[in-house]
Figure 1 (spheres, rainbow, N blue to C red):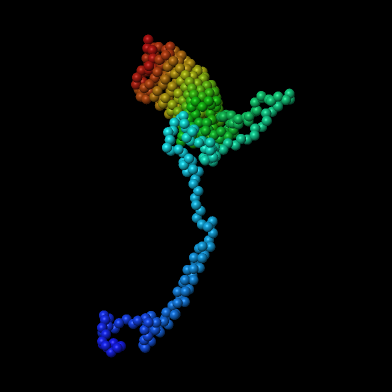
Figure 2: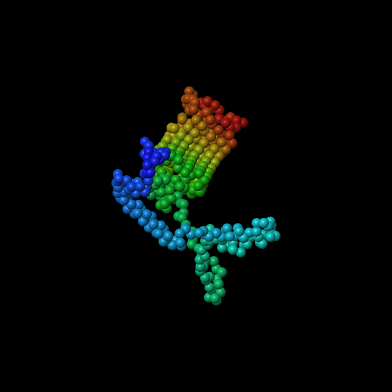
Length: 383
């Protein structure tokens, strides 16, 4: 290849078929300008310049705004706490704690300031007391201030008539319910050892009454008025000395009348429905029995009148009788028809198997014809 002087120049690497890179200082006839950029590239680059300038301006504005924030509004530095200050003030190199140097090592002067227990302490409100009353002489009075008297309840009297059934049975005029004074379980009323002086007002459905070990001294006809279902009355160990006429006769369902350990001298009238009569340990005399008092009691099976003051056996006795207890009385004689019909030698009383006459001054061997109808001989003295 010829040089400018007509000579040959050396072909360097990059020349030949591979075309060499254009020089930035060379001119080109194909429209390439400076830096090897064409006119189209320069035009596209000119369009990008405003965007770059705008981005730079925004960045500078944000940086200036950040520098404008006051230093005082930034994150405050935390001051060391009081506990840390005390901890740093301790001399840990010589921390030999004992009772002798406890006050030197640990400063307790500001202990109350560091630990406030005011919220945990109980608050005690102190009120003002009324000044003591003064006597006319001007001296404080030592007289006790009268207190309110305790409330007094109405007396628990059982003599009042019932005013109507309540939740716990009949209520007396004083407002006392029978089932509060006694114990009511179903149709049974238990008034044992309740300090009663009279029979309390009973519910109409009462079938069994137990009022033992009280101080009842009298039976009134109104005590059992309207009690058509009453079957058993047990008044053991009271002070009953009188019974009003008709008190028990009106009880058409009464089967058991238990009256031992009282002060009866007269046997009350009995209803025809009675099965058991127990009046032991009283003062009943033969004069206190109505003539033929037991003849019409066709259901009577148990007649216990021991430990009384009877002078003779109360005959005639009903055929239904099974047990007759008359021990410890004053019986001295007996009629031959007391148990058997002397005119009917075929008469046999199979039910009456228990007769007790022991403890009486009678000699049973003197009346042999009085027992021929009995299934067994009476218990007593035969000599």
